[in-house]
Length: 420
Image (cartoon, rainbow, N blue to C red):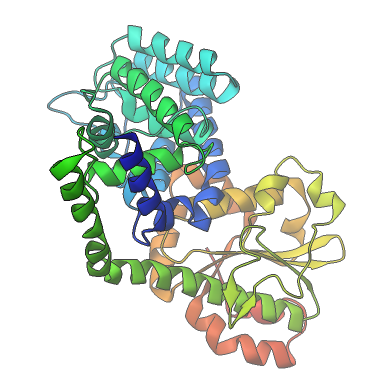
């Protein structure tokens, strides 16, 4: 079976519709790690202070789990395990303050530790409490804290693992999750040359098997079973063609995001500013050229030295005058504004940006109401003082050329944007 599994993983890597291509290599994926980690820290602080409350809707936990759920198909439905189910009275972290504090201790412990042994000790401690409804779905939070140690968890991943290994892992129990984790680590070691140190790759592969995109190799590796499986594998190319429409929609979203970044880049340069393009977007192509051409290759030392520098490097577009940031722009095409806001907070709290040209959320015209609604949530309570402004695609597209030709400073951009 081993040689067939290698064939399958190779095919999976080449498939344009696989999670490897659409999620694991998706440039926006890495941008969300720091914001989700910071969100987890906020949940912990609220639980410790006794201010978390007793509802999921509108909480800081809903904000970060919602951000995870938007990580394309693989995490769709990640919030289901945390939704309050009144008839079952689960998960019991809303009605029981003691259980809520235990949940907070687990998140805090795992955020602070760095070794496999420490993380497992924290999991075993929460498991001994037998909190109703608080099972391995929490591993989706732990993955974003320790992507090389803790695999994500959902039904499709479990189904894929069982199909590939012949195991019988069951849902809902931490002991079963830890057993599956050991098997996933072994699988990752065996095919490390095709996968990654980041366990997102191997769980993405298992997810695609678990959803039926690929059939697991047969136990028998010779004769009719082998040939039948190879024939079935070849049919996945036809499946990919049928899914081309949804894949094209994802690519269009990425293209539009890149296009708007290029508008902001060009406008900033025309106004005489130095421009920084997000570190992981510099190589993206627009009009046949990389976004980063003509832009800064390094941030000023004053920004590189602040605590949130890693996050600041990922802000979509920065305009600078020497060492001073004039304006920051986060382009939010379809996803949650949470990650962008966290990156702006890191910048604003570590510099004098709030005294310069401002912070801008740039999004489709139709998203203004949604963005305003999200900013009213308790998780964004600190944002109001920053005077974040909304800049619509439409206003930017209509006015960028006149501002570039006749504008000076930030007056033109401020005139076409609105304080949120």
